[in-house]
Amino acid sequence: MNKAELASRLAERLDVSKKVGEDFVEAFEDIVTTALISGQEVTIAGFGTFSARVRQGRLGVNPQNPVQKIQIPSVTVPKFKAGSALKKALKGPRAEKSAATAGTSPASKAA
Image (cartoon, rainbow, N blue to C red; front, side, top):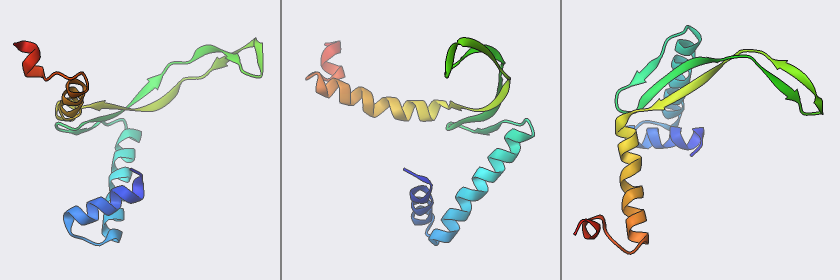
């Protein structure tokens, strides 16, 4: 799903115009980005936490000249940690699907 599809689904779900759905997505992006830039975390209970982490500088290899070593500087990167409800939602169908593919149900394995 891309940004336009997300905006469209939000608009349908909230019974508003597509333009308002796009505005919601833009506002969410702006708020999260601004918070991360200012050093804050954004936590949505059950869904997850957006944060910014510093990736330490390190010694690397020049891809154009593998013999040459280069210093890669520290950089701030975004991070997302999934919440328990999101993890649980993703685990459920996959566990059922893999059991069905194997030809056994989780209940029959316990018996």
